[in-house]
Image (cartoon, rainbow, N blue to C red; front, top):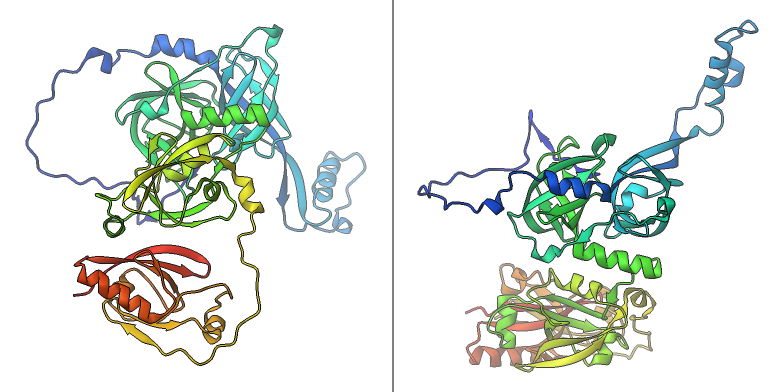
Length: 500
């Protein structure tokens, strides 16, 4: 089980802070008996055989201090009972200070198909030479690794059912329907003790433990400990809604904060591992950013939603579908794109080769496009860097110009500025030479060396063009102006408020 240790402060560990707020006393309504079951025993009895224990062995290399030289071995009488002990002691310390030993690890898993397919965590079997699956009746079966997905921490195993009889398998639940407060039950192998059952509720949704855009954990307060990794999280109907994967804890044991990969994600990964032996993730070939209040206003949207396309990869799926920079993606494959957090997973989960509908906001109205999903590996093959060309001589040094409404001092792109700021030969626009402290540009963290490519969705190549468009936006009594800016090849939009 993966866990994160909180930093110790004094003699206590700060795990969470409770804030008590005075409020009127509310009398709860009578609860439906079905919401608070008297016992999970009947359901657990049926579910137990679907959960397995997983034991792995692997060679572990240990670094050790250089031991005594062989010549330093003490002289012992022949046949001494200590002779063999000292021989092992000294010979184990020969060589480069490294020693190999066979290690074991314990985890959990669950059967998803009667033919013997089993889901567990990738970190449970990572680096394993041998994988053994132990059924509820203590039957031990050698497992074959079908495939893994390290990014989401899922692995698919295969065993041969004893006597060719189908194994009991779980039923998948819809993790999207799991609500905060719903009952959940975890079955696993904590601390190598064998099958154990704990219960709790879904305490949060959409949790992320790192910078990965694919993380979307269910959080539960059901007791999860080391060894529960890879085990199932069931809902009150006995359906799998998650795979127990990680815990937050100061000690490595249960602290009421456990995280499970949603079943809808795991089910899709399992299908791809079974079909291809690897996971094929969707890719459309765009870079994008959040739609803020200022950006929504600049594009005429009634409220912030969707993602704003900052660049489109040439010859990528998005380019072939007609997607353009400045488009705001509002819908993807029949689902609304509420914000930037969910969009990467929507694209990654799209089936490679399928065609999906995309709703975009363009020119003040919504349009529909059809896009064929590519594969993420194609992104590594795309050569998105511009090819160098001969430099054209500049007639003279550009004169700085100030746009006071934004707090920017601007210059036309010159060879000297290309060299100073490391700009490519293909960059065309207006270079930011200085940003006034406390200005609208400073608030959006613009800096010297950034290149303004567009203002109010119109290309610019001189400071005068920037000033002209800004003055026009001011005359229209808009509160902000939208800039399209590039920094070291990374394009992004910035909506700057207009100083009064």
